[in-house]
Length: 270
Image 1 (cartoon, rainbow, N blue to C red):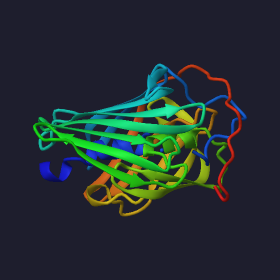
Image 2 (cartoon, rainbow, N blue to C red):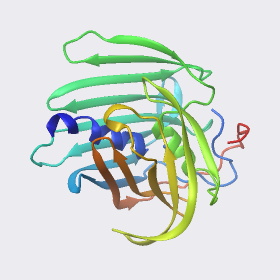
Image 3 (cartoon, rainbow, N blue to C red):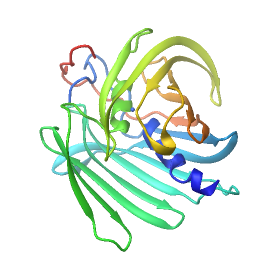
């Protein structure tokens, strides 16, 4: 099980908890702000396998621009048959333009470390990727991107800023650091859901991705977001090639309420 498990936990968390143009409408305060913190319990194959914490950090400078760091930290529990994992992913969110400027991934899995940095060009049409394992020289590559491309964390936070409507589908071009695809999320219903924080009114979304390998889904993923202005993900279910994974919100602290930004034009059909 150790070989099967490696990468599933971290990849799933950083690809799902977190989701240019086709962004927020600028008609209401941001659904999130600096100081927001969400904690999740993650179950894999029916047992608690680890935890994740997603934080909107304090404003900072990155590559000369003001950003909010979207920080996800994942770690496994001391469970038999599970790799020791403590990974950190940071996506640099530029609130003024509602896009990401790049990201840093720091992996520590079974005492093997790797770092991946993605930096988008100023026009957002290309990305420079640097990957490095401990004891090895860095490997660099350049990738062409569609206009408005986000990472999955940025796409998830951008979706939170949308005015969700039952029956509507939202699409975002996404770059993972090695692969590009169109992530689509359709709001299927509004319903009540029992959670660790009590009963919540939520939207149920069906999310389509194109992950491969251990993260390949047998069916579209299901995501539940609160139906209030925050649109906080409270539950995620995925049926992966290696088995079922569920992430549930266990604790939440709201961040700073941030004034709306100027309206951003959306792509046709999005």
